[in-house]
Image (tube, rainbow, N blue to C red; front, side, top):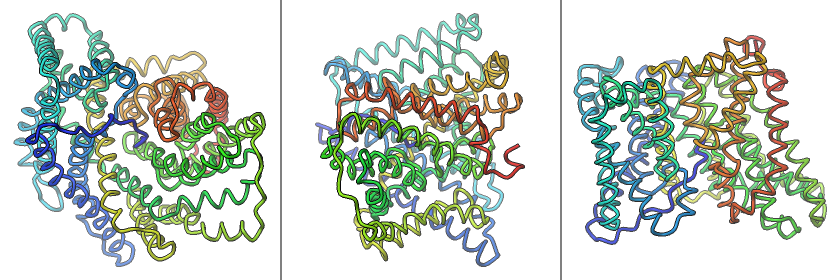
Length: 628
């Protein structure tokens, strides 16, 4: 996720050949500092926009335009950084279980598929670049082709990196994979007349079979989406492939999405500034003495930290190392702790500033501010159910008790944690008061966190900022490239008539509104488990939200329900990416975590149904106009 709520490829490739290592290193030396600098530039641009508009009363008319252009470059260079570091979002379950020989074959296929996608898209993107030279931005009069140039550079660098990876593989394996790819591609191209008679069955072949096979064998989701879309358009339709480049540009040109890298950066800063640890410490001083009290702290910490960072992987990575050692010393099983950690991540998906909520707003037009308000109580309902199961588990495991903290200790712990407790209120105030947008408020949080880390806690090591910026651009690049290719894929599905067919199926679900809601829950649990929240929402949000609205379901309520449903899928075994991330963070075999997950997943499903069929839980605190 939902940053990203992510699973990543195993590791950055260590090149054996000196020339390959030198080229890889040269790309990193140039691209990584530039991408990190672009994050800083965005912070400066947005800060200047807020300051001149709110303080000076003289807004910079060009700030949003410049921020959007810089953002597209940030997204593309970030995707290169992610590919170089092996951090693109992928489904790696099959690769992990494969034998060493099979893993080599799958990794070779992934690199070849990536290369084919780039080679297919490159000529179309160059054509689109030439078309955009005459289109100027309104305020700065900069040719739009400069934005397309970012996509071209991204494609060139990823192709170079993919070819370097291929060069490290067994030549026999590479020859077999490339030969098979050439034969399949040639057969599809010369036999394209046969595809035309298949009608809409082509959607199954290209968007289910081809994309699904690529995702299953570990090809990063972004490239799987891109290959399926390009192949469908090239073989089945007469649509120019430059349309894909245009849709990719459009997909990451929404300024709302700039909140993705900035909130990721904010979440990482919270860890280095010491805010997350002090929030956990305050909660532990209050209820840590109870049997299972640290389980309450874990759920509460995920609730509070999620309300600031927006990245569930970052949340879990911040909370688990602080609590797990003490929980184990009290006799709680590590597998149960990981099960609670994973389901707490699913519960926290609707807590602002959730990246998924931001992306829903960008692709569907639903008010982000309304969703930020609506997501708090549903997450609280689910957290209460998780706490109930956790307390029962702790009692069954006979977890030991610890000494109750004195009121003085509790008071001091909360006083120390006060800057972190205030941060969500500061963020919300700036949005509600109209001082900053949902994107700009991330900059407010970043500046606040820097000041707290430097002046209050004095825990911020400036040497960690550059690695933090690199981690930000890598995760953001992986997420945003998915959004780019998923936007193109969603457009292709819409043009094929699939959108209308899907809308008809959902619109004619038995049981009216209740049936549509139940079918949506089932659908998004499945999508969340096999894809990931962000690509699933970019693909299907624009298709399904109008159907729900036409059936009389409030869009804000529907958004909260489907995000929770995706969270359940994302953190559920056997294929949920978040589930594997939680297992990795907790350092346990995922197979051993499945059984302890069952009661927690049941609690989540019960809570999800309660939220779905009691709309007041989502809408009760919204203004009447938003809740109608």
